[in-house]
Length: 96
Image (cartoon, rainbow, N blue to C red; front, side):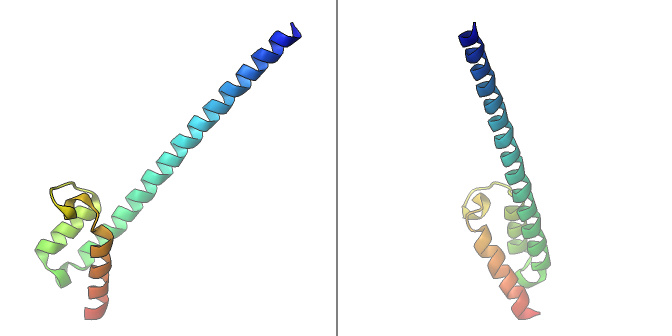
């Protein structure tokens, strides 16, 4: 009887630990998504502010890339986004 209670207690503790771990992972994912959204918003603001410097076509592509719109080519996948945002910010600083 005592042994059975110990087994039940151990199972309940493992279930509780699993629930806590699932909640932790969900919270971590939510925080990562929120941080990514903040970065996209900041990148979009930089793209908008550099529009007069880089021109409308490149500015539109920067804005779309910052918001995560997927298109064909590297600009759509976002792999060049940090580089383009940095270059746009540098151009804005130099020309202002």
